[in-house]
Every structure is written in structure tokens, then in C-alpha cells.
Image 1 (tube, rainbow, N blue to C red):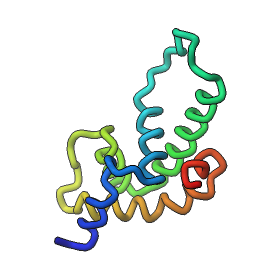
Image 2: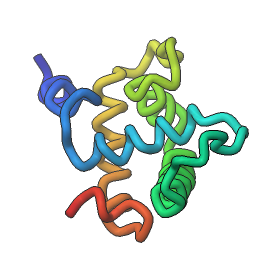
Image 3: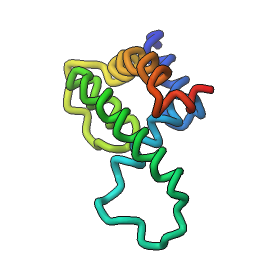
Amino acid sequence: MSEALNRAIETAPEADTPFNRVMKTWAHWMRLDDKPFSTGDANPQDVKELMACGEAVDVMVSELPAYERWAVRKAFGLATVWMFPERSLPDALVAAETKLFPKLNKNVATKRYFN
């Protein structure tokens, strides 16, 4: 098994790492529809932090090359098909994480996941 594949398995979205926690928050944000919270029982500060995190991560992910962006989307349940057969999904995911990790660790909206 390749080293990249081993790392991808170790850091699978099911693992509870800071990177995965922030990316799961982003994936949740991506799944939200445009309807306002109707029950009124959401903490406004939590909603504000969710929105800030989601927007920040979305900007960072959108800056990745297409195959890495798609790998992240697939890993966190936002895509169902791997559209780059000439590329390795685990390698693309590791490359994306390598690029995103330092940005996420520094960003004011996402760094709290790394403490």
C-alpha cells in the first residue's frame, strides 16, 4: 500500500482530527438550504460561528485545483462520483489536506478547531 493511501486511511473523514472536524463543519454548512432556522432554538453565536467557518473553508477549497477540490467534496459526502480517473483519490485528498491544513490553522474562523 502506498504511503499516501495509508495516510488517507488514517485521516479518513470518520477520524476525529482537527482537520476532519472543521471539514465536517464545512460539509454541514454546504448542505444547509437557504431557509432560516425556523425553530428558534439555535444559539445565535453558534450559527454565526458555523457560517463564518463554512464561508472561510469554502473560499479555501475553491482555490484548490479541480481534482483536489473534488477529492475533498467526495471525502466529505458532497460528491458521489470520482471524476478524475487519471488521478488517485487518496493522493488528491492528501495533497488537498496538505494545502488546507496551514490555512485552516491560521484563519480566525477555523483555528479554534485546532486548539
